[in-house]
Amino acid sequence: MAEATAWEPVPRSRTFELVLARIEEQILAGNLQVGDRLPPERELVELLGVSRAAIREALRVLEAQGVLRSKVGTGPSSGSVIAAMPSAGLTQLLRLHIALANFPLADVIEARATLERASARLAAERAGEEDLARMREHLEKMDAAGLTRESFNDHDTDFHVALAEAGGNRFMADMTIAVRNAVRHTLLSAFHRLPEWEPVASRLRSEHHAIYEAVAAGDADLAGHLAESHVRDFHQDIALRTRADRDPSGRDVPKL
Ligand SMILES: [Zn+2]
Image (tube, rainbow, N blue to C red; front, side, top):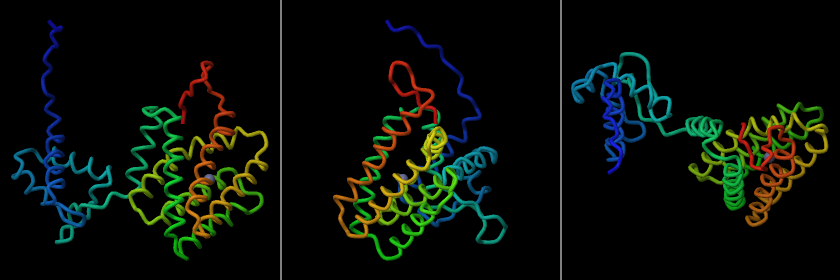
């Protein structure tokens, strides 16, 4: 017989999780959609038979997840509104989980390479003039002489965000952006460990230009291939080689 597991009392402070579950049910059932207003706190207290504190805690969690936006005031437009999940919420969540090493770095790189390839393919098929102009803007900023490693990394991130958005698929773009943002710090640390920055910067510049050219020419195969290689090669040649915290077994110790 299996060892008996002791019974633990249910913590009373967990009521807010039940409130969360109720709100989630309404969203999944389609009763609450983007732009809809939640019933006022007072009404939720009555509807759900819980304390005001539990309602407030649940609303705070949903706000942090980017699902709710609260509008201050007392008029008809005040209260909590269901918001479309912005990439910021997703980015924050992924960044924390990656930082906590819940995902091995190799898995993160593989996912990022795959996402960037798919995003670049979509961009080559769908990018409009405005999208291309936005990508060019970030390329030009990266081309500026005497850029610090921090600024380069910022424009590099912005270029990848513009590339992902040019594909026109919001979900793909948000995931690509979230993963790129999540590795922002790892990349910057790698930049700082490089003894010689300029040769690397110029290699990255020309890779970005090549991706842009393939997207502008509408060549999805080439754009996808270049974007994936850009991510894989960087991590292989630079980020991993310059890692100070490499495990002697050869396994990566994620330390983002
Ligand atoms: Zn890049």
